[in-house]
Image (cartoon, rainbow, N blue to C red; front, top):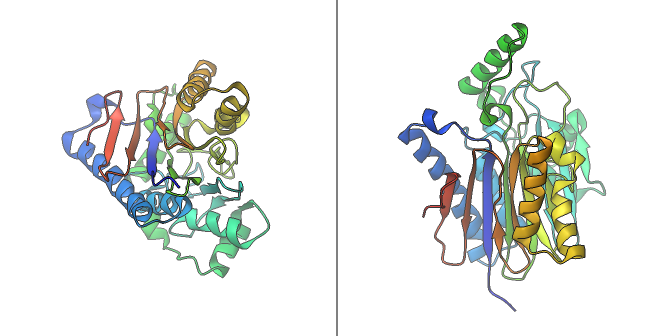
Length: 314
């Protein structure tokens, strides 16, 4: 039995423009990524499952208001917050997801409860909220989820639309997601993804994060994937599953398959990226935009993180 385990995370593709990123903010992002990596690694190091590891890693990012998930979720055009999340385990393709959810402090826990405690895969809206409450999942107040920066971003976007001005926002303002993929020492893979969606999105819009095969995928035979970016493109091209299919049917390596899919999405107008891990613990982190908040950690326990197109740093 192999003892090799590894974890990769992302905090969203489409970053703050480099010329607008001050040193303190950049370090805060790196530390947020490191905290997530440590949380997931602690599970794997103790012999825990890949599913537990990705859940822990995503929860750490959901709790950090810097990232567009959980506490840092963006606002819809109606001034509300609607969150999506999914989990998937590779040994049996078990999956659970929620969409259009508000209330649970950690939407990823609601998604996992759908997988483990129902016969379904995806629950939405008020029904998902009621289910989460019935399962004893911790909720948070409206004030907990309100961040001034996200509210200001919505007001700026609504003003732009009112003035019929061209959309000059960078990718960071348009989308953001958090996610994790892992391989545990037993060879099992898992993926988890969570998001607040797009600033100013139409209420009721659902992105790729909770769509199994688009933004989230895990299968021990090939790979686990968590995507981030312009979700409509990832849905239409079944991006996460396409990577696994290319590995299964074309015999491509993880990196070749993941890079091909992300490059093709970019050619179609789909800005974003993803993280992926294969059954041997190899990791790929491709993106087609200016940057992606990302990181990885292996059996040595040293977290490596990156934001822009520069090597990961320990």
